Amino acid sequence: MQADRVTEWGGELLDLDAYLGRIGYTGERAPTLAVLRGLQRAHVTSIPFENGDAVLGIPVLLDVESVQDKLVRRQRGGYCYEHASLFAAVLERLGFRFTALSGRVTLDSDKVLPATHALLAVTAADDERTWLCDVGFGSGPLGPVELADGAEAEFDGWRYRMVRRPNVSGIDDWWLRQYGPDGWVDRHTFTLLPQYPIDFVVGSHYVGTHPRSPFTKRLFTQRFSAERHDKLDGATWTVNRPDATRTERKITRDELPKVLAEEFGIVLGADALARLGDGFDSA
Image (cartoon, rainbow, N blue to C red; front, side):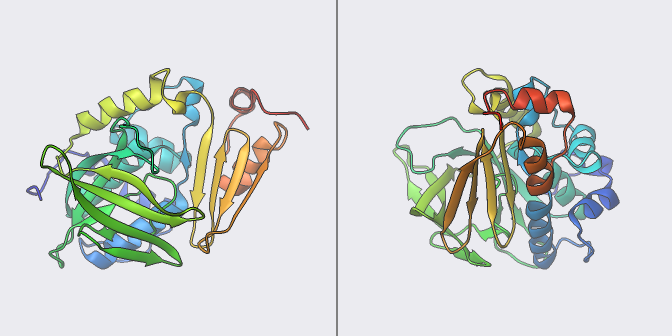
């Protein structure tokens, strides 16, 4: 792990009280494993995943002031780079040691996909192990997963597994696997090459602006809890549960404001909703 960082992720600019209020965390403020677990659970169950700004052509900014204004003060959601940047500032402010990482979302695909997923590898002051904190994927985990080959974690029935596999270059690839309706799936892969704020900016620029990025084409939102994982992909609303059951239905343009507000905690203006609902069927 890297040496302690002072202000690299903007921790000194963070409104920590506002952030903790946003996620409903009232516990201790110390760089311990128990605190890390509490923060991750509170974060992933309180701040939704969403790409609304990218679809609307609004720049996605990753500086601390911009991210906390959007995700904390305006109570919006964001995609992985926004979540990870905000959580990194929190970790830095509380004195955790961590390394930012970049991953490739695979979902069992055989294609080599771009490294456009933001992750954090964290060490607590009272524990020598390294923990993967994936707060910006949209479907958990509810807590850190130990960065060790074969490590398994279960949170309220949601199951994850860490696997290390050598690649052709001799560098170890790490894989986070998740159990769901289709069994065990390789969710994403990553190496331990350190990333820095500017690397997240570059990755986010592709995700949020490139015409081939799926995040610029249609609305994609997620909300996660111990009981369920809600996902809205365009007009398709899917609910997954920890027992691997799944339900799915289409929503109409008229349903979009209510579904976003009540199921995902995202409230948007009429103009944004109208543009995001393009292509939805009417009631």
